[in-house]
Picture 1 (cartoon, rainbow over the protein chains, first blue to last red):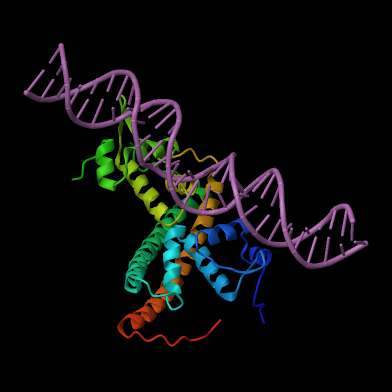
Picture 2 (picture 1 turned 90 degrees about the horizontal axis):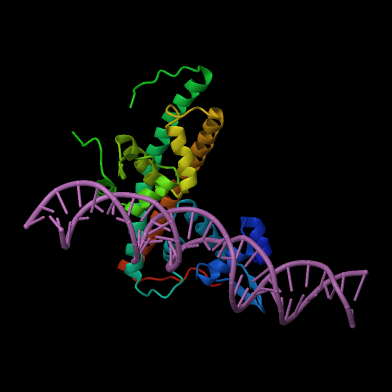
Length: 133
Length: 133
DNA sequence: CACATGCTTGACGTTAACGTAAGCTGAACG
DNA sequence: CGTTCAGCTTACGTTAACGTCAAGCATGTG
């Protein structure tokens, strides 16, 4: 069974981030580790949130955008202040992500094409000079 | 037929960026507009590059990463200094993008699930309180 | 001609997302 | 008991990607 509670260092090693980063996320209200005296303790929920944060970052979302998404994911836990507003934000983000997903697919196709080109250029060194400026 | 050459303002209006941004990209060697006296003139190729830049940004790539990709796209035009190195970078980026594409797909599914949840919570106001800490 | 318009080049300011260094605390160890 | 270690807070530093003036040409217009 995976350990229930992790120290900051264990978190860092597990998710490959620095202590500074975790404290920073806490200061920005993306994480809410418990305290044992001074020390931060990270629960399973904190880890889930961190995973979402890191994933969001890979997609180019800002921490502020990610925070809103996190609120959405933990919609059950919070007081449902402005719940429908939060929900609305979620719909928007989802649409955005779908858009990006599609664009990214196209970009990948493009790049693949381009790399085929490059392959030719390397194996054969033919450069037909298609068109002058 | 779309106009061949655009001024900086026309570029800005077309692609919804500021002059500062275009000059900045030039200073970073992402764009190479021609000059008529002092003034910058943006060709079709510049526009293509700008489109790629903006697309790359949406995927969370840094300008430096994007510059490398652009080099790749214009691999035919450049002197092929370190051509195979450039090619290699392209392969890496491609793999990276494929990875993100997949992750993004998963994230979208997750978020969709989550939003179903939220929908329940709004229509019916039932909150079963699944598990205590 | 005066002046507005559009573009130019500096150069300093700003925000996000941390990095880094200084100095304090509390448990643990020889 | 001294110190080593892990973690804490406070605070200034840094980088990327522009924003925001300031001041200077060129060109057209009343």
